Image (cartoon, rainbow, N blue to C red; front, side, top):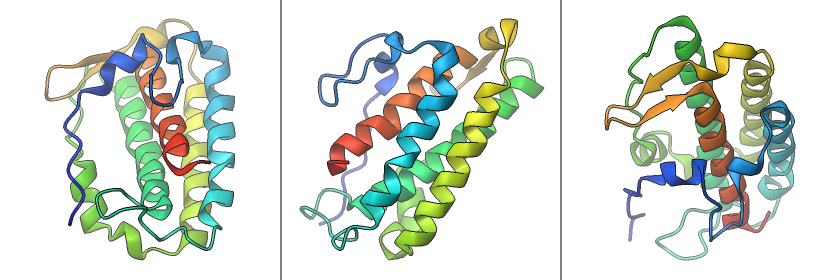
Length: 172
């Protein structure tokens, strides 16, 4: 059995607490976002060092390794989106199919130690990007192809839910 693609629109987590993981992005101050990115990333090496990190809990759920790869790639995608928002006026983000990325990237076959190191670097890069934001830059906009509009602020809040939620998924 393969993983069923996630087709939910998760943008509601920008303003509301997630009932599954309990994270409330709206309660996070903008000044705390870079450290929150780093702190969340810091939990992943222990998850990826578990002896069962490559084992799916059931055939329809990613393994901790696959979730770690996803979080790493999410950091990279959001870093690119942040850079685009700062370089262009109201850019349209390139589409990213997270499910295709997992298959094409063979997430379940990657080296957990390398994923941990790469996730740390991707998170550090993204945190530095958010750390450099100031004033009106938080209001710059960008769009997904489905019509969702983000400011740099809402992009940061939306992003933060992902690694927190997935740590919850893997019991990290």
